[in-house]
Length: 427
Picture 1: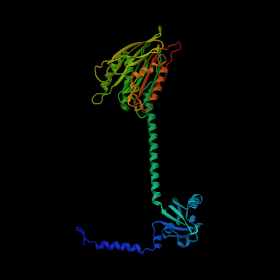
Picture 2: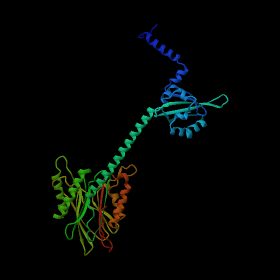
Picture 3: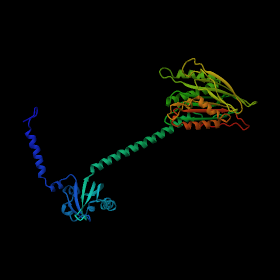
Picture 4: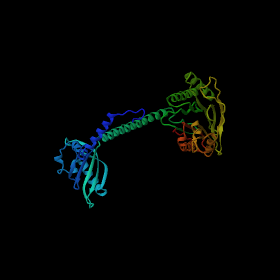
């Protein structure tokens, strides 16, 4: 009696019965010969005693030429025979079985076929080894897959190496371009020692920090340091424009406010509309007094962090320049001025915010900050500019991956001894 919704399927039942009957009609020998893998049995000396049709077909050999006439190793390539004698056979004797070993067999036409071989030793009732039964699986598809995988890996390795080479070449080009935006050396200023350092946060990008020192007449020299907003080629073009504008402006009128005002006007005229470009900058003038050994400094700041004065007596403090507006933002931007006098042993330190905004702490969430910088350089007050810059270089090294932005440093100091003033190259 059929359940509700079900109908008898006589045809399907007949098909299933026919399939089952066909399986029962297969003899053990038919199953052995027609198996999807190769089978063979060998005596303990390796002589082949039995081999199935599937394996003979792979080899391209006749049964009469194999059984009792060839050993298992005769079916292998030279390399396969060597591996069999040195590894396969000793392990089989020791363990009694071995599974899934990759070998190659020789084909009658001269070809080579990759196979996976497993063997087990059959023992008699007395425990003596009688023969070896071996199963051989076709590994051609696996070999093709492995070769394709290897080709893909080699292609990926080649692409990676090419990318690394391209990146190295790009970094070399960027390094050259970056150096072109900085002075090769700092000008010599009588009675003044100088030192500078530029640290790139990423070798893959052009930075926007800049500095320079140059004479403007027979007694005075001008200096500047700043930071252009952004990175990459656009920032580099602004950096180049800024440097040359400030140098040209200083030769026309070295007054710091006048120089920054000229730069402000140039940036506003060049970059208008939806793509404004601006920067922070400090511009100053040094006027050494040979009679006293002092150096008078007058500077103006446009939105830049305050300079630090390191005194010979071991103290350090900021030179206040509050309220100076970013350069390139407004047509009538106010710039803040400040003056100071450097006496023997004093140093004026200028820096960009890549230093003070470095991320610190175990979780890299705290900023280093201006107060920490002042405390650090106070420990080097009274030292010459080069020593101060070297100490700050070590500080930058310690930030590691916490340094997210480029950093420019410029130190100008009065020698505290009778040695001749020294000018350090920028580096």
